[in-house]
Amino acid sequence: MLGLLWNVARVTIVAVIIVVVGEISRRYPRTGALLLSLPIVSLLAFLVAWFQHHDLKAISQLSRETLILVPLGLPFFMPLAFAQRLGLGFWAAFVAGIVLASLTIGVWLILAPAGE
Image 1 (cartoon, rainbow, N blue to C red):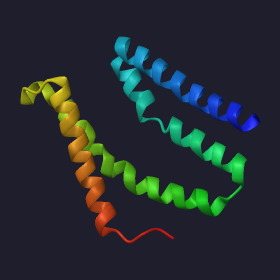
Image 2: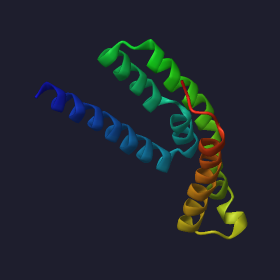
Image 3: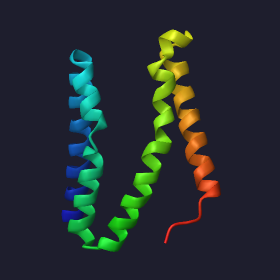
Image 4: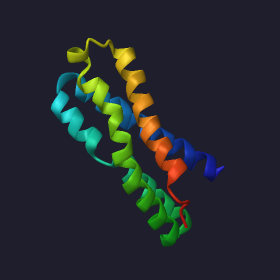
């Protein structure tokens, strides 16, 4: 039962963060971008992983993989950032961003050696 409550608490925290950032970004886009750029979910994930398992080796591996994958996911933002200049609507830019990020991450997954 405690495990279920812990999972519900984690999901609730993430949902609250998403809603708060969404509301802030509507009124203050720069502040919303700042909050989005913070690794809030990563910080929470590392803390939860540590308190659940106390496995520094696994956390270190997770951190190394994240360090590689974050820059590879950045192409997602390019079509959205330049949507108006490119004459793209939201959904076209959103899908194009997903495709670009999927391509960069997919190439890395195929070509990079597997982790430890």
